[in-house]
Length: 293
Length: 276
View 1 (cartoon, each protein chain N blue to C red):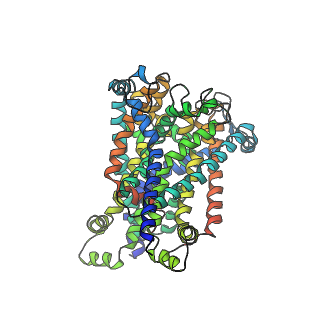
View 2 (tube, rainbow over the protein chains, first blue to last red; view 1 turned 180 degrees about the vertical axis):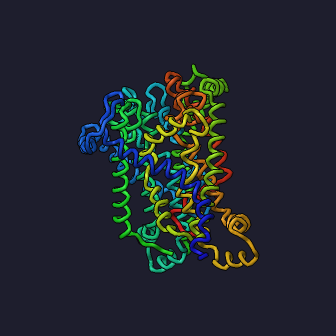
View 3 (spheres, chains in turn yellow, purple; view 1 turned 120 degrees about the horizontal axis):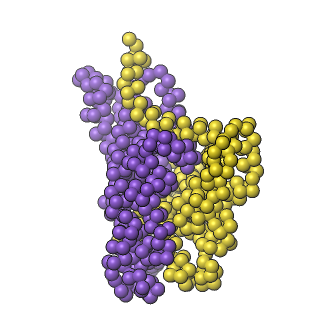
């Protein structure tokens, strides 16, 4: 018996558990969602019937989907660049052999320990118009009706909570990236007379390329899949100003709450958006990234 | 050069000042939360930044009203099941992809990687249906089952297995070690640091699941800590410091876990970013 076939029983036995789970809870639901998404159901989610694939087009063009897509994109644009910049700043600040630096690193990493529910409720408490400290300090709209209840500020307020919660992750990843940059590079830059800023922009940033790509991709996909912060902080409101795509699918206040066909259609479109996005990100950034060894 | 010692000292002082300032900003929400959680309900408006009156009553009420004891037990059991299962399934499938030859290997591996592209949020609509049909709403099976295997874990462990020298397997074969023996005695021990990171990661990801338990646990007794916080925050919307006390109870165990396993955490988080 050739080697090619001798291992087969082992391969089947070893792969079966993973294959079973991934098929049943990743591949099958994706396929079934694509199928469900083209069915039209009545308002209670019953009496679904197939009606061609127009529903995807209709959903995509609908005002609700367009608004939710806009909210999601704006949320990503608010959280990812600021989150990355702050993560880099903190990591560079703490990248020095000083006494007690371990303490500061632990503090800067600490928000990684907060789940979305914990972080959101903390910020809900801070921003609460009646008892919140921040609401008191900021005053004005923060007191009445409250930053989370005003259409113009709600998404910003949610973004701040999310940036804070992700800061620990970005800090840890960028710190590890900084530590993998060879010290000789800084030395030779110094010999060449490069100042602090020049060393940062000519050595640090380019060498961090792969790290920043990774952190950026993770933060972007988290932003597009964010759900808990909208559910707990704003419930998608006011006036749909924080109804993201995920909230449109799963939220209690969503207008398609009981319509499985429409939920599936939006979920599939969210998947398509994410695929396009990661393709774009990887292609766009890869050209400018320096892969050191 | 003579002036540089003094200027370096100033620069170090400046950096410390900056470090302290940033640390204060980062810790500020956590501090306000702690102060609020230990305040009696009628004093919550007084001195929100200082623990001028301290009581354990608020924490006790949050524990009781939020059924947080039960939720902590549920979360722990689910996270442990998920952690153990993910390590086992990842090791097995990684071994198959790294050491076994069989037809269709490349194709299957590509399929595994493809599942990484599917966001969990896009599958919950159907997974809820599946779990409901299995009669697993409000159960440990229902909370854990979609997370028992991960392509990420498979990929991570396979990377480690691929770095093991080829002769190792040959030598083991000469010694009469079959695949199971080699897996148990050689491959797994050598991959232990990665498995530690994977385990911590699986535990955290499961513990922090938010959407899934809010969908699967329709009965409060089956809340995890995350969906329990949601229930508490909706039931006690008029008692903000009760909610924040519940948040402290939920946040605390994970802070402790991460302090203990800091190194595994860093290794896990950076596995995709930096080589080595």
